[in-house]
Length: 169
Image (tube, rainbow, N blue to C red; front, side):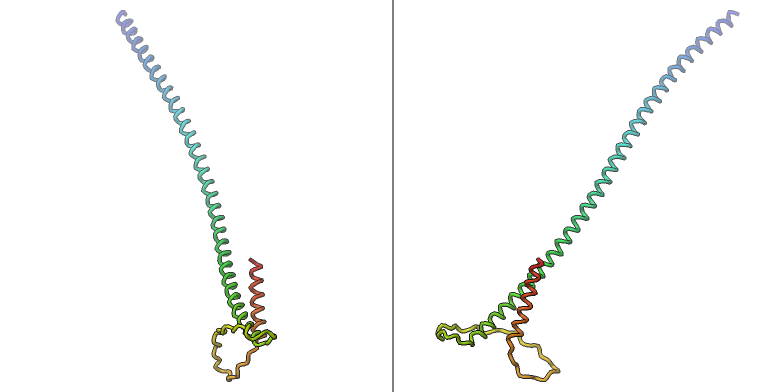
């Protein structure tokens, strides 16, 4: 009986040490589970923060795309205005050239009139340079007859058109 009591006491001590060991291991496991929960919470928070940053980047990219589209529209409008300005300058140059030649022609025509002033005061007019007329193959050759009034009227019409286009500008 004594041996049985001794074995029971030894078994009880061994069970007590196993329970203590199991208790410390369970405690350590609980601590690890708590730390893992905290780590997972931190990971969730960081993932949420990254999601917000990606959303902000996406919004910024959309705003930049909108801004670039507006810049593109503005550049296209400036290009159109520049082309219109160039066309108006070209028209003004043509009108000015036409006006110059018409002025020379008008001076030549006016110099034919005698106004009573001495002939020594009259200055000679510059020769008028005119472009050669285009040859007409089917029309018979007719004597050239100058009619300054229609040429001047055409010049006045061209000048009025040039003035109208400048008014648009």
